[in-house]
Length: 277
Image (cartoon, rainbow, N blue to C red; front, side, top):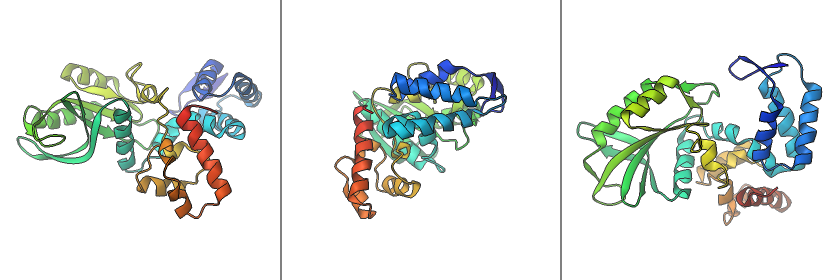
């Protein structure tokens, strides 16, 4: 049966893809089987992927808040907008978890002009910059103009001394991170120009979702036990990852949340931190 994707394109419904996305959430096989059965029972021509997602998310949430939160990762990243400031912090957290020293929101002097840099990262003396391109619409893609523009900035900054982590840092690499995807031309230009690209599902094995897999780097916006106002409050207080709630319970107390509900929230945060249900 044909369903309608977010882009408006029609595609054959593939239960295997639905199963895989739920397996990544940590849901058990019995629950996944029940969800697939329910989706098949409600399936009709031109049903949207968003409607299928809602069915799966609701059933996951009823059984396991943590599994629902993991299943919700892409939407949770989108909720780090609309401006993208928190997305930049989230990306810095990801690189830090992978062993990099990171700095965010820098002003660096190039050969010609100054530049606002989203993230700087360093590992074993090698310094790179990361430019974050946030899209609030799920189907929006970064086209070739994005790497072309960023390459000009990178060229103005590389090869000269900056004061970032030390007094003698020289920028040698540039990565562009996008929460959606890049067009084929953008990918081709980046490869030719020596720029690194990271998007939701690119490059294979090192995409945004791959960088999160197995490391439990879920943003607080993924949590199902928090309201949007509570998530915004935590983000403003630099609690970007769900696991960062551990040791910072006072922020929940400041919001006047009951002790019983704090316990529920902390249980979800703990499950996300440790990869349990």
